[in-house]
Image (cartoon, rainbow, N blue to C red; front, side):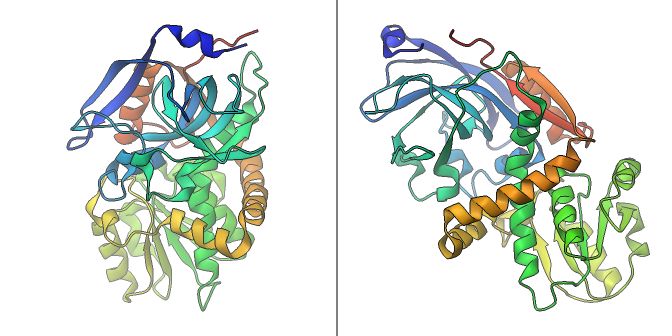
Length: 363
């Protein structure tokens, strides 16, 4: 079993970083980590999922303080990802090495955290540089300490879907509170997993949903039968004019203008993503899933919110498992390649990327 004694020597950690001013710049850099100080715990990152949702984190790194989660050298940023971590060494009373958790981590082999309010089910992170950030990002759930030779397929599905489905879940909750909750919805970036999750929830409520996607993704999205209608971005003129809510996960201002001109009205437009790589439209007035989660947590309580979310996620994951193409990658060099593919739109929409870092486990 791991023990603090392993930290008598420095740990060589590696991390994938991107240029904050130019997201096309990347590097894999190293750092030596010593023993954790009082109140700190050093976690080894086992694996994490990567999707267009993480690219949005990078696009909004400055505006929404995503770069503050895991600070890097000036000019460089560490993209937050959702994954599994294991305590390698601990200076937190009652927190034993070897314990596993799920939550936000950098694309790195190790991360130093300050666990607080460590309970049976979860803990919160309270490093000074994360003060003022949404509590959603500072909550970590304890996970099973079991470590099979290869992660089970359904676990990999959840590694990828759990973070992006929060956007689907909170958007559906927001739309359900409208004066006319059954009003048709038009969703851009229809091939994205967040959009497909939203379509799943909307159709369950009987809401008509049209998906807009790139021409090359139309066959894939149509085959899933997740939308009542699927159109390419060049087919906006085929939209049926009338009242409709536009949920823009692409984050494409020109596309939104084209839709509104065709529909002939200024209906509700919810900017909820940046899969087309535009940061400015997102920074001003974008839908905030963390804020919606905080509001519901205050109203319902965290246990009820988590229960409802888990039930909805299981329903979506059960169907998504049939078309998701789980792609496992090993090491940060491969993670860099995945980042470039996803950022440039070269990754197929069915691809679900899981990056494994810690490949061996103690007996």
